[in-house]
Length: 148
DNA sequence: ATTCTTACA
DNA sequence: TGTAAGTA
Image (tube, rainbow, N blue to C red; front, side):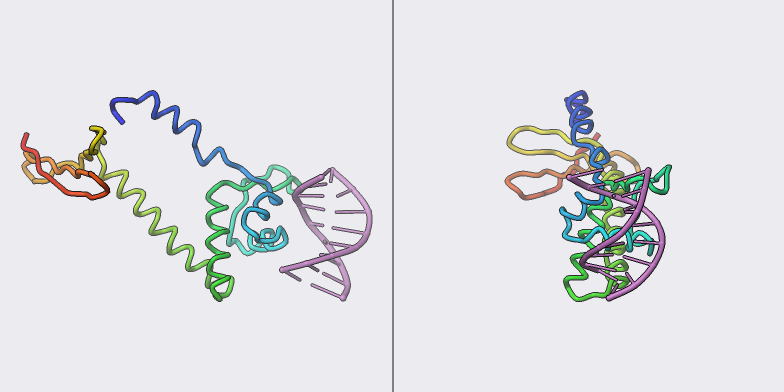
């Protein structure tokens, strides 16, 4: 990451999920959930469309809503009721958000050495003399401590 | 062409 | 929930 800051920013600019916005017809086709259901779920506050200036304006949905709708539909297909499905997906989303914050906070730097990748996970000791490094090689992750 | 709200099945 | 109607 540190070695290629420009390319990393470019990557985020191109693949930002926030740039993916769909209208109700698209979201319906993507998820298999009817537009009627989508509007009903919104009325129930189970999902949220982007803010609409005009109440008559067409709804727009962000990527996160696509993920949420897919999740609700998954549990509904599993036999859960709509409200139960929403509770289920909320648990998953809460956990996903927690993991996201955790990983973002835990990872300091990532260095690619070609044959393996080293991830700096920060100070290992209270005296801040040892650094914990995660090493990923051939799909396996091991750890090592570096003195400094 | 697509979406919106309302209303009825 | 699906669908029809009349709009925007």
